[in-house]
Length: 44
Image (cartoon, rainbow, N blue to C red; front, side):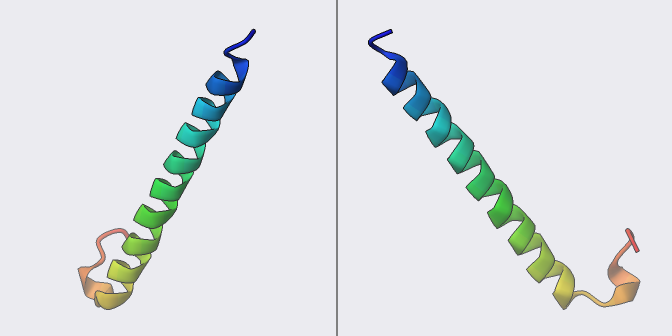
């Protein structure tokens, strides 16, 4: 159990970086979607 701190730290680092990346992708997508006209949005 002497490596538990390292393992937990690694899991937390991966989780935080994954959440940060997902948040960045969603934020960029919303910015890009705001610049498009409604006719150019096939998902609407």
